[in-house]
Image 1 (cartoon, chains in turn red, blue, green, yellow):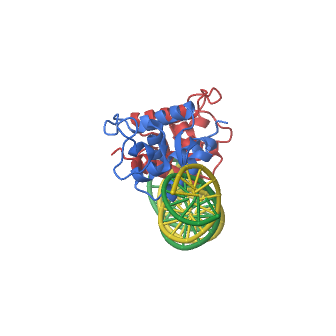
Image 2 (cartoon, protein in one colour; image 1 turned 30 degrees about the horizontal axis):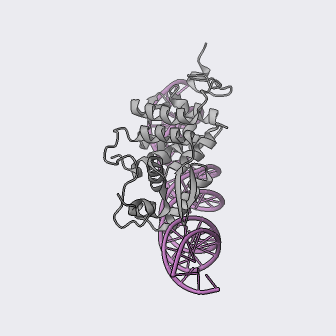
Image 3 (cartoon, helix red, strand yellow; image 1 turned 135 degrees about the horizontal axis):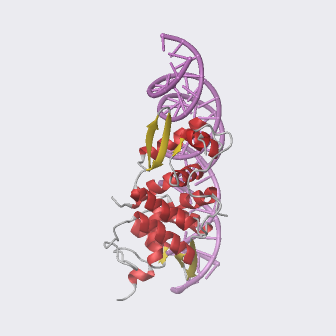
Length: 116
Length: 116
DNA sequence: TGTTCATATGCGAAACTTTCTATATAGTGA
DNA sequence: TCACTATATAGAAAGTTTCGCATATGAACA
């Protein structure tokens, strides 16, 4: 359904700085929990909790790989919604944040510790 | 500034069924408080409160005309943001709600009582 | 000036959200 | 099997939002 109620519900999920940044990160490239925790500078349980909220709403998907769990966008429609919302919000295209995974010093996640 | 924090703040204003519907109504045509109260089927003080929230954020503008106050969108950028957000949300173009002012039986606002 | 009508404001209780800390689970390798 | 690491969940305190009701303001007009 396309009621205002449903749409407000979806917007509510996006109306949170950390969740917004998480979505903006995972739409660039799949990231594991410990990497997001390092980038956002927030305790891991906190990040897992926000991820659970987004996951239960279908906005992101989890993929287990060994002990790591990588999160990526939930689908094309989610990507489109995000483009519309973030695009409309970040009016000036952001040149500061490179597209794709950014290595974080001190992050022990597979992508950050992989050899160049 | 274009921080996630600021953007979440804006999204929070939109993440509310009544506010969303109010914005969708006033972007079609300027409406007075009593009309919105009738359309939304909510008490006038409640509607005024939501309007105050949107007004203080600059999303809508008020224009006094006698004892009535008409509300309209705050500007081009607000209209664009709304188009992006509502457009992205209401994927199927809504043919049910006509563009422009809709007369409400029992509403005593100038637009509803005007002669055809 | 007093009344009426349209709108705004103030305040408070309930419901919800945020975010912390502690703890649980589950995969991996010794 | 045990310990270790990555992630998930639970529960609770603090903060915020929602929405109802009572009341205030302010324009218009008799």
